[in-house]
Amino acid sequence: MALHFYKTMLCYGVLPNKFTYPFVLKACAGIGGLNLGKSVHGFVVKLGFEDDLHVQNTMIHMYCCCEGEVEFARKVFEGSPKSDSVTWSAMIGGYARSGRSAEAVGLFREMQVVGVCPDEITMVSVLSACTDLGALELGKWLESYVDRMKITKSLELCNALIDMFAKCGDVDKAMKLFRRMSMRTIVSWTSVIDGLAMHGRGLEAVSLFDEMIEEGVAPDDVAFIGVLSACSHSGLVDKGHYYFNSMEKNFGIVPKIEHYGCMVDLLSRAGLVKEALEFVRNMPIEPNQIIWRSIITACHARGELKLGETISKELIKSEPMHESNYVLLSNIYAKLLRWEKKTKVREMMDMKGMKKIPGSTMIELNNEMYEFVAGDKSHDQYKEIYEMVDEMGREIKRAGYVPTTSQVLLDIDEEDKEDALHRHSEKLAIAFALLNTNPGTPIRIVKNLRVCEDCHSATKFISKVYNREIVVRDRNRFHHFKNGLCSCRDFW
DNA sequence: ATAGGGTTAG
Image 1 (cartoon, rainbow, N blue to C red):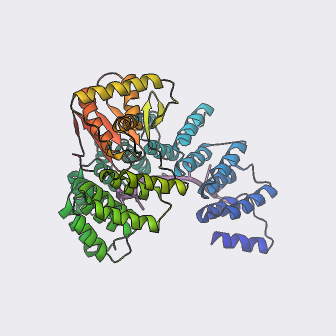
Image 2: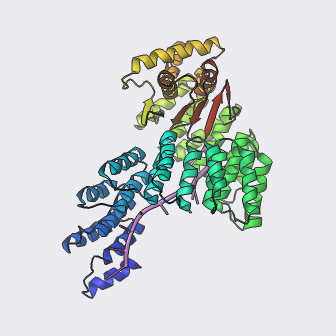
């Protein structure tokens, strides 16, 4: 609409002024078309408004909203003669939304060096980057910074803090903040329910959801995803059915593919593979690949290997360029000890020029994020780290650990497989943490994929042998390892 | 007169 008026304005020969452009650029941002944005940018330059701070700020925002065009935004940002908190927030938010969280945090640090004061919106943007990184220490520092600088704790800022604490591994702190809030929206409730769900505290999540309804806050579709995934991560099958059925009946919310996905996941994880398949058959909408993958994972876990193989093959046919489909099939062959078939899957991937997404683990130490990938030797300390990994291996074996070699992708002999397992990124990160932190300090790591069976088992032993609490955030949820046990109770 | 922000299945 705004753009329509702008075009009409130009047609009639009425000259826009510098106040016009923020509106126009904002409309472009909403559409996200790069060419449109560029042509408006051209007009801005022609008319000489490019040095106006407001125009620049909206221009940065506009480029950030065009898919994958943060670099254009960065150019405008670099070229701005003046900047204020809005300029920096727009750029930091742009990086955060495009998954370039480390750069977002870096820019926030730069902002302080330059001496521009962040406001509550800047803090929301940098907090969401921090959440993505899983950097709890940074998050805590940001919270204290907000207090120190007397930045207004707006509702959105509180929500961002809750989400940060929950996703950085401290749900109890998230819960405390939530309880202290005077005003809460559905977003506040959902953030803390999701947080509890991720930590496997399903019963608490469910009771909070009930409390929300009692308080008269109507759940929306996102809140239902939260409560259903809480049921799924904690094996609350009956409760899951109850909430799913209540969606339409009591709240008039038509379940979407995500909700069906949660239900399939709930049944699959609970080991009810047949029921999950039955549920898929009766769904009124087409199941997607996510749903099939969660069934295959269940087949793998429950030993329904033939069924898993059949579905995997179908999935590869319909989505041949998705590497995780091959990984699932190859894991099934590994469990069947069909190494030749497993190698074939690997060859299929190679032929299509695909690679397994490398597993990586991040860890925060002394205000710095360190990233490890399997077999990584780029770190200064790598010799010590590998020695520590070997020592860890010896110590936990003595405590009863038996390596789970079936998930190693390569067809190599048992000893080499064990070796490959020892070089998994999380083991490197844990060794690095054991070397560089004081005894008894909890270790927090963030994985980009799901934690593998062997690392899960090894980490349990490490937590006992080295007397450390180890908190692992993987792609789906948290694992709190303590004294040889994991909070997921091996259910994940 | 104009600009930047929070929750989403595996």
